[in-house]
Image (cartoon, rainbow, N blue to C red; front, side, top):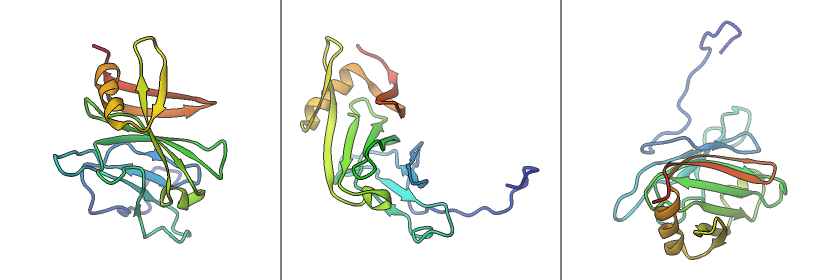
Length: 169
């Protein structure tokens, strides 16, 4: 856009995906686009897109490690970049048992989302406490009970803020 609000250029940077949802901005100014679909055998993934035409990956969006092997009904992403050498990504899933996913990357910058990392899931308890667990099934049951259908997410000053469409039963 120019200063008068006129469109100067428009171009699709990510194609071939399905039902893209909110996503989120990375600390290195790329966009993480989340696919929001889930079937019996597969699910959506998260894609990193670089809008800067001067960068190497501008015309090369790539699937990230955030969605894991099975994929999911992903909505949005937030990042804790307090340690730029090991950023932490938080991913919401808009599904009744969509457990929040935490991915601690083993890289930095663009490569952080395409390198190996540690995946854990949010497990909430009835006494308003929580922990991060490797037990995805337990975390999904916790999501179904305490935070169904998570939507937007933000990380700010050491805290995660997220919204769920449906509340505790």
